[in-house]
Length: 231
Image (cartoon, rainbow, N blue to C red; front, side):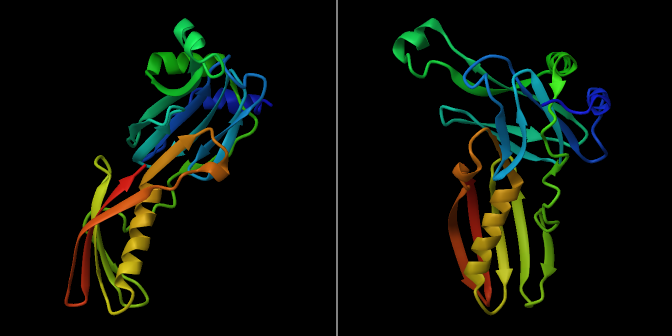
């Protein structure tokens, strides 16, 4: 249930590693499901389980983290290198909620805490014994950055441009065969790995990002497509 005591002491005083961010995920006391642990999932991969009054930590490359709320809305948190983030998962309710919807009156939510509040909770809560020591986004391919070109084994050249704030970009691909199929697969990959969704849902219920393409242009064995990542 709880982590190693030495690791817990070390984790409370951690700093971001060079080029990465440090993220604490904290589960507040009370609320629905208080009697059992909840899985916390980045996209389709579970990274740990938390009981109330517990936390876990991960490192992350710079990216957009999507905090999916119970009401279906999404909060976008821009993760920057060498920064520390504290994300609290909990519940909120009101007397009016209980009257209007007595069967679903506690609303789950993620909340980004400031340094003072986050440190206070991490120092007073326990490290879970059930989580993966991982770096989120470490498998992001190096070509998924603005204006990088490369040639793969099939002599197909690519150029990617991606704006992580707007979640829009473009792909230019040159070659002889399957240009659109390769371009769409590339866009799906970009949308999947450049925006990571943190949820407490079952892994099988993870919703893949939807892509929208427009302004497709084809000339001289070269295809250009603009796209949007939709969550």
